[in-house]
Image (tube, rainbow, N blue to C red; front, side, top):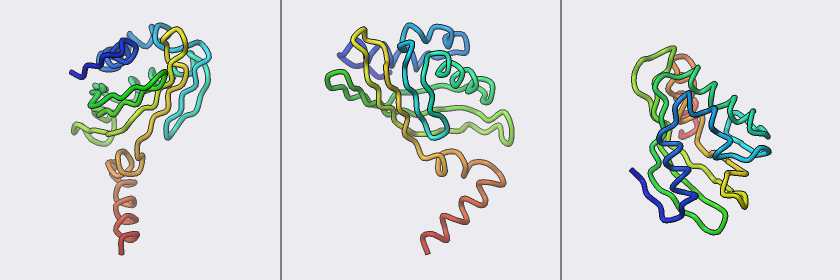
Length: 145
């Protein structure tokens, strides 16, 4: 389990590593009402929209969980690297992992005002899907040639 000496960062690490479908209702403890969230598939503003994205994650995937692998903080900014482990509800029951990073900006009250996720959707997700994965791997081989 990752630990950090900044209590805001540790609070976020603990929250994400223990995230459950039920804890999505408590996002207001961790995110501001007008927070901004962006990842490769979404860009939203507002607590309810961020909750919707994380709720969808629990609907679309089985056993989703985050493992924070590193954390760096300076002032009101934090950068986390993580492994996101899950099983697909469709296609394959095999365990999957997406490796990525989050840039967080804390509001004066210590909650998250900005959350930006960085991960390679092509490599980490599309290549793992049966039909799309075949195409993505072919394209990757062609690009290297």
